[in-house]
Length: 414
Image (cartoon, rainbow, N blue to C red):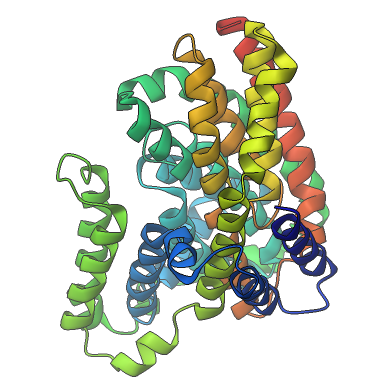
């Protein structure tokens, strides 16, 4: 356990220093825990969440193929024109769209769709894209909290408890709406100086002909409907007994079949560095889980709260947020589920876990899969999001979100 913790803490420290590429660090950390025997090769493979990896690969392929048609440029121009180039309107449009899509698709898919549009819109308006992407990551994690399918921790909780789609919305959507209403304007004020849009840029965007941005109408007609259909299937993947990765990879396969683009070129454009970073991270966290480190943290709640209902609910909320921020909210939620199951007197305990794990996903750049996906795309575009920079934004957002969630839990459940 001590070795697994040491490797993970050292890896986080090196990632935070930004002196060594994070993918190299994650893969080295994963290699060390396997070579040391903390995990054997089979356990290391089992630790990787291939549903997340498959979802990312499938969506990356579809986004890449459709991106070359010019459809995202068209969307970016229209978004800029509808907002009339006003910074607050742009931020609200992107944040609300991201939050809603994250609730009814999932936050990883949503980020893969909106980030390319954001880069194009920022380029058209001549503003820094990084504040917009950070706002989208935050909106995605908060918005995804509202439903059963929006965030991976909720999917894990629903799978264990059988709680319904409607129950998630009824119990989590109210606090999600309040949190978004507080956090998004706050982030806009924090980034306002970096989101100033010159009058010339506004006029330039309003004068653009969006239709002319479609570079390959034939390719768009062949591939964009497949992307749209894939997104629609995400809404009903549970009744169809299909995992999100299956839906995404099926859509990618059909897209590649219909596309006339080079297969080699498409595959080479996948964010391989992001995927390998996630694989390394999953293995290191798997070592923490296998050695009982995560379980020790989770069991500490039961000892400290000593059976007090309010203390248990708030302990689950805050500990799951801190743990998710440091590790990753998917494996930490998996580790917390048996502990919460032993404590739970009613469903309120599961809502506390969901709020803590999902809101904690905003704390660091490695706390949630959508954060990693967005930062990988930003780095590939030449605009990397630093660990410390994101921490300075994500940590206050997480604290404020948890304060709001604490009030909500105490008023409604305690």
